[in-house]
Length: 316
Ligand SMILES: Nc1ncnc2c1ncn2[C@@H]1O[C@H](COP(=O)(O)OP(=O)(O)OP(=O)(O)O)[C@@H](O)[C@H]1O
Image (cartoon, rainbow, N blue to C red; front, top):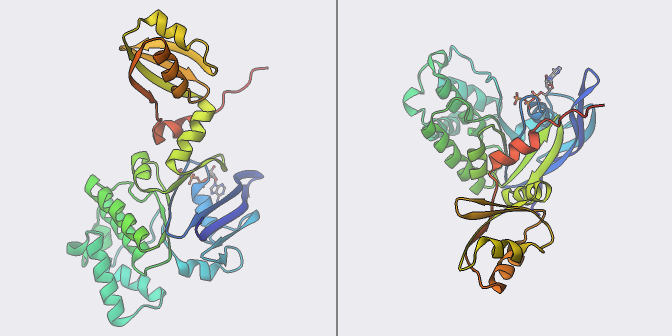
């Protein structure tokens, strides 16, 4: 375990007596990219706002960069760069002027300011638009400027609410590379996103919340494991040398197997645990040759859909 830079304990927010964030406890370590996922209205932005001291928790506690999110709000904000939704740019000012203003808030001036602003605008691909007024920017350009605003003052913690929404594929690729570069510098990154392949590609750990509650949390392998334990394992088996009745008979006694079906020359085996070794041994014992055997690995998208699927109402 690394050093926790973001940590919450039983963080809860009630609006109109209803918990929109419910007993949330998690940590994000230094140098980690944490993907915070959930359906619309799950409580992601509210959590982020509480971490930044913009919304007061109803109960529970939290720390960001060692500072209490309730009592040391100014220190928390100094340690963080944030991409809010919507952004708070001065539309009648240029990209350069917006970043300058932002740097000054963080007490960065003179030559250092100039260097930081120019370097950051280059990094997010806005070099040629730096002296253009923001009201003339496209949505994607504003998003790039938002990312620039997060990183320009080199904060320890970077928070992004849907960073690639509205960005073109090249911009999204640039963003992913930038995040990996920031991670390599030891930054802690907390992001919300609805773009599953992006999250899968860059996040070290992922938490999925539903109705304010953390349903599943871990790295992708851990999520796959937790999901499979809950939903069951699916094996795909291809066998030579023996016929179907022999195959079926050979594996029939294996504990945990619920169904065996044929599909495109494969046997599709559903089981409550990973029975691949038992299957392989049983087939070999009866003279079969296993040419393919793998356990289906669900995608993050499938895991997300399953975890966030509304539970059917129980009929009286
Ligand atoms: N100021 C507020 N007053 C009352 N309810 C609020 C307030 N802010 C948020 N909510 C409610 O809290 C719940 C969580 O909202 P939140 O914005 O945190 O969700 P989210 O996960 O960020 O959603 P999205 O993916 O759509 O951005 C929603 O039901 C929302 O209507």
